[in-house]
Image 1 (cartoon, rainbow, N blue to C red):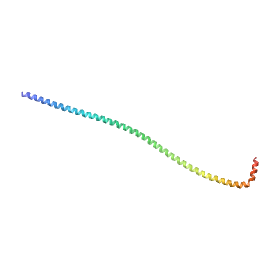
Image 2: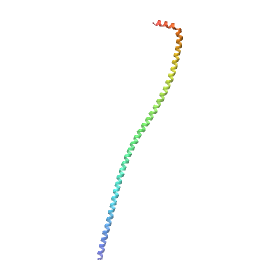
Image 3: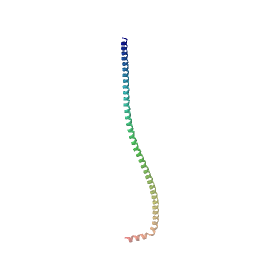
Image 4: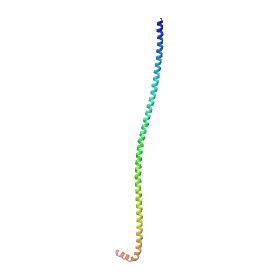
Length: 139
């Protein structure tokens, strides 16, 4: 009987041990599933962050492409501006040369007119008879 009592007692202890072990394993399983769910949520959040970062990177690469195009246009505009400045300087030099030529021609023409008037007044008084004879010959 004593043996049977010990067996029964051992059986109750074993049953209690199994219950405790079962409860502990269930608790661990629940904790594991909770951690797994947390990790899945974190993974989903990281995936969303990664997608957002990739979209931002794509947008920045497009902006860099636009910036490169703008820089190329700026370089081209600066070159064109330099060429136009050179042409303006050449035109200004030509204008100065033409103005100088014009001034010289004006002085020369005024001198010729003054000489012509002086000759005309001298020749006119001396050659008035010649002019009338030349007119009659040509008629």
